[in-house]
Length: 550
Figure 1 (cartoon, rainbow, N blue to C red):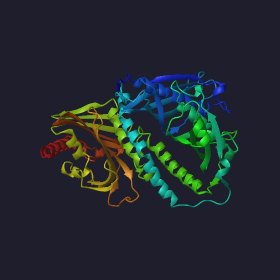
Figure 2: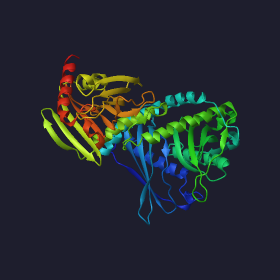
Figure 3: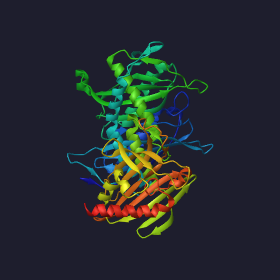
Figure 4: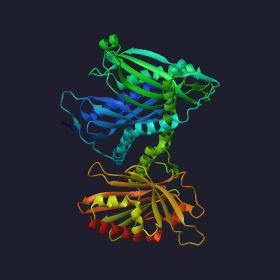
């Protein structure tokens, strides 16, 4: 059965923060906000699906601002992309002060919802109707975020193995984690569930936040404030009449923050008697705490005693590394050259690489500066950042052009500004790190330049989408600076390849750089301004010659 997708657009929810919604500080409680977020996102999912939907997971959430009593919270949600039976829903939360009319961003989050079949027939979702440039952008990046979700566990296990090798714990001024254990039981009643009797995911999240905050308060002797959540994942459903058992315990502390793990198990009447639990949810909540002056308090150290507490202790370290990498890398709209390549951030750096190029390609304000035969050149200035876009009409199949352009060892065959190019690290089939050297510009007193670059390649999921080859500079500790070369950087570069027919395509090359790199304007990576057209012509010849042999 297929369901036709509704037209794109935000589903809004506006709420005035009342005293009943607030905590002791007069701020909107995180649990209440999580319920509102889930309700709004579920409405957006069901608007697209046309059937009932349930929460599958909520990505890492970072709370940037607090909302106070009297202020207005606006939550907007829309489906970014549909994947057969699941959807990514984007959630934007802002707070507005009605007296000053100042509006601030509270959080930007992403959730995954799945359709709940009415009968045995499987429901396949229709694609989202994209109405704006923003819709197209989020639609493209939703695929990258799904890759991160699917690869999270592998990254986590790799970091756990590293952390286990460093099994050292402080002995002085430590507290046993067992002292922070809290258990709470809730009976799911009709107000906690939807019209199908399934417990609202947001209600479960709110209960988890409550029990986690109590656990954290036993450590800080204060009122903890929820700052972020590491991915809510729902492993199974619960329904009206279920008993939900929440177990929360502090896993580790990090100076001014504490991670609390919460496990949720469900029992129906028969399971309750037999003590047969269903694990339906787990999450990790990060709190900090402040004194009356608004200063962050320092948490005491945790000493793991049991084998399970040691596992949780190291798990918290691994999640913190992933969380910090995510927070830094996912701000893809900002230029961040020279990112340090580590296990904790590989997936996010690959995402950032693709996302930064996608954002650059979607920008407006490009000005045509040259048109020659099958080549067009655009430029765009934004402060001291200069960007180039080169369009090439190529008589080669798009998949062939993609294969050739994504292998940078071929670049020397069409770009004279590549002296050498070698693969330093084949991270995966879609991500490789290269070391490139190039000659100095035609000016005296300049050294040859070198680059360490991450090249990320993606194939389209839909015919209307482009092949993508994204490039940016990274830092590898194994490749230090050399006295023989001047280390240079690529803020954002790469190719988007659109298919025109079975034997032709349009290749768009992008390059973004600061004014300090003007002498190194690129059609490849490092060419001079006067040779952009020449290099583009050589690229076309190379692609068509190689393509004719395929």
